[in-house]
Image (cartoon, rainbow, N blue to C red):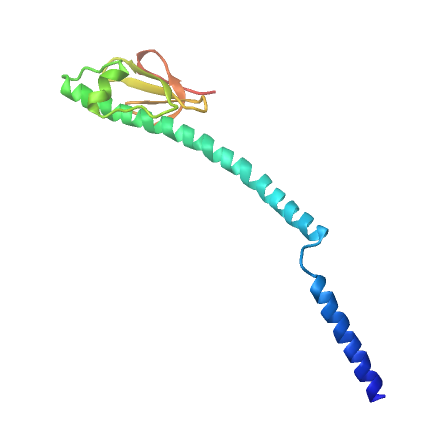
Length: 149
């Protein structure tokens, strides 16, 4: 009986060794599972990435009008309290436009009121006044902010 068990073990060991030699790659099911997981991760990541790009474009416009406000106040300080409505006049006071941000406007009203607006690369319009921080909206006449609807 011991000889039979030894022969069986020897045959089984040889068979296992032979099977082990053929396992050199992935099965089709394993590859499909990996591709499916990559597809799910991509479906999650791409919309988040696109949203981040839009937020960055909007942040550039908000930053631009904030810098414009500082440059406009510096201009007014250097020119006896008179504000300019021309953005190019503010280059000497530290303003440089960001790429993608367009339609910079300055509207001046009475008693030192002003409103500055710009359009982001995502086509949203942002504005701020001498008393309000940057928000989505535009400038009306007399330096008045009009919120986006």
